[in-house]
Image (cartoon, rainbow over all chains, first blue to last red; front, side, top):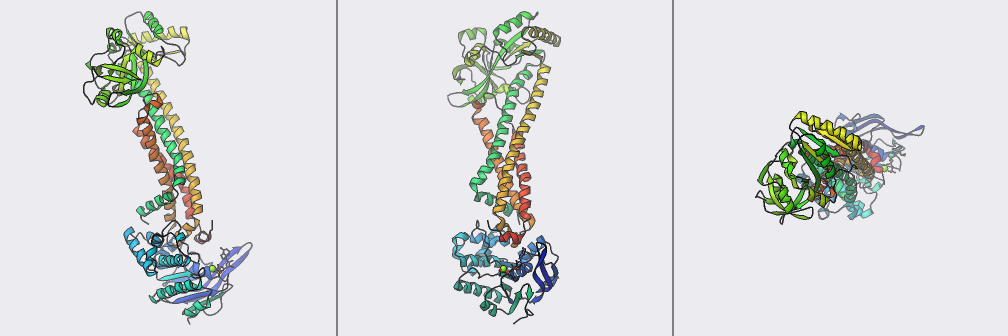
Length: 225
Length: 387
Ligand SMILES: Nc1ncnc2c1ncn2[C@@H]1O[C@H](COP(=O)(O)OP(=O)(O)OP(=O)(O)O)[C@@H](O)[C@H]1O
Ligand SMILES: [Mg+2]
């Protein structure tokens, strides 16, 4: 379970302070498919980065699985992410020098999983996203939709409880976007918590919880639909 | 992250930029190679001289002309005339060059000398004979070879009567020496003795390298040393000729070795620091180029330590491969092309080990800063970086 309480994030901006998130209190129950919506600059990515421990809140509490993780340092977060979370970025963020196969296996490298097992597991998830015929391709040799599917496979390879996706369809055409969404919903159906940042009200409608942000504030209770 | 994966990653990083990695290792290769060659030449040069001193034993006085001082058979005759009692006075011409039989080849130290050398007791004849005055008048192209050469050129079979190619001339072997073996004087085993006049002719000079005077007692040696010092100081000034007893020569030799070692250590340090700066430079470029990759790895679970290790090992891979190739190049030059150096170069295992250790250390020292820089990038900024 994810629970945020009076959570705020400030960025120093010259002599002023820019509040990217203000007094956010929200609970995301396990197995929820949640959408984070709001205008550009409203704090969606900031929220997702804090959920994934890539960024630290300025004040407030973050409870993850019953544990206060607000004070975790960068390396502790690295372990938490590696073992319990999957990240999908808007810009794919694949490593260009590695093949699709090695990109997907990467999280397992930092879990010290042996090479053969890593490769077997990576092939499994690549098959699941329909890319078993592109194992040895480098990111530059894949289409945008294929790259995003590799990125999703990479987020899934470690069998995470929470999947965080920052505008996973933002860079894709409508059809490919729909396909990626179908994949994310399928992952949700396997019992995982999925949090998707999106601009699309279509997508938001399909989710069972919508967190709506404006200027860093939540505009409703963030309750489940 | 496992060690095996860290190494795999480091090698992979290097492999991806082969040309750049090669150019970076070049600094280390040249540094390490130069150190190996220089140390080998230095050791070889002092070895050849110390071998002679050590096999000659005590009661010996060495007269050595300084570079630029004319010193020929005429001065030897003068020395003979100046010393009031009977002693062995043996002139020496030192050379070094390729040696070959019909089937194999190598290189050897060459000593041109007179039959009297045998009487100083420095040589122990195994088979055949040393060249005599009579033999010399008959045939100037005769040689006596050291024990190692018998092994390497003739596989241990008796070389007497065989012919060898030395300094571009055909020689007939008339005798072979007993092995000196490990320890003092061992490089005599790699030496060929030929008649003095032949050596002078082949080297196209009548300049002598050294004159050895063997006396009957330590007292006599001291007397002769004193006498000759005064004599040459009057004749050619105090700097033209060095007169020294065995003790003094050994001391000078040790001092020379120490100086040479310091000099080479300094050269090596400079070469490796220059190579290290090259590595640091490339690693900083690499860290900047791979900022996004670092962000991705952190987001996927890499700790700071993982990132430090990745870049540190990459720097070490470059320096260690550079070190190994440098040792190969240096040792290869010493072993395969000894004629380039015009002296007897002796490969030093100690220098090879030290060069390797130093090159690995250079990788650590100059890789640390870029690696720490990589590990301290903020993951969010790193993920946004576009370059
Ligand atoms: N590192 C930073 N330093 C200063 N201000 C920042 C930083 N990161 C974000 N901000 C500010 O915080 C606010 C929220 O940014 P955020 O990236 O969360 O928006 P977003 O909702 O994801 O927007 P978009 O839909 O365009 O991706 C913005 O006003 C932005 O300028
Ligand atoms: Mg955003």
